[in-house]
Length: 419
Image 1: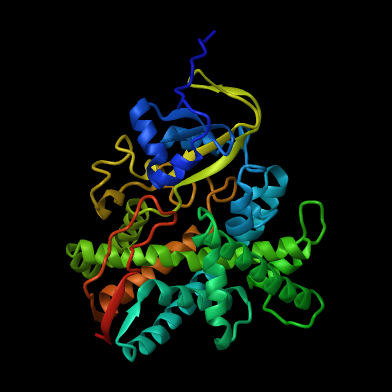
Image 2: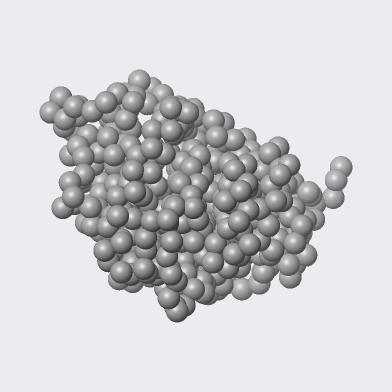
């Protein structure tokens, strides 16, 4: 029989405040100091296990060993995820709900999004030319809100754009916040669910006609694994789970602009490298820059891994940022190098995990990852090949403590014109 080892343990009553102070580096710092990809600590008043790396990711997404129910802290459900959404489900309920999301991500559906998003970029650039200077992050959030709503079949008037953009972006800008900023996110969650809930009622009553392939229609008519229509509140959460992540791509687009600025040698490679190099560049932006710091689950049943005991119901965090920068997985992980993705397709499932890992259909990997990649491709094409602009002096640094992280100036550009 294998000997059971004592898991490396961080001493102290609770380290939640330390996690907030160290942000994305909380788990990587301790993985390095413990010389271990798994360690025990205390967070939110309870025992927690933190782990990272490819093998840890494979374990974390084992549905027989971990569950999502009860894993996300209440403040995250109140802002980022919503209650009873797909991220909080397990087993048959999760598989059935995930299948519904995956049905929206057909090749035709994704191409339809790309075309709509490209149209919105075209219109946005036309408006930027007259403004002189724009804050890219703020402008792109509005652009993506329009793209998300149009693609999902959600009516959005010009007068509503700013309001709905602010509400949706508050959901991903506030989960780690304390005080007033968190309450802004709570208010945004309440308002977006109320807005979408009314639209769902209208669809179900035949008062709002939507195309059958649109997310608003699909989710409004979706029946759960027991054959029941989703509660209006849950259906609203799931429509928001389509809209919110698309608006959040603005974070990656800010980092795309930053990468083009920080690594100007990439511009010529992108101009001449075709779609293959564009794909590699986008993947490297997603790997290199911070997005989500970690994912949460709970141990489903007692088990042993690497001679360490995992006890039922223990909160477990998977290090997303640290895994994307793990020197055991990536050569020179702190160097920006898109060409590392030339031959990495089978490697990525548990190693490139900025939006979670595992399988799309049988796991918790974000189905919106495909939309994210395509939206970033459209952005890169515009910023590198289709427009010219100047970058004024500004603070382009970004923090690994603030979650989510974006360049402090939110990337200002000016003197914008078409090539």
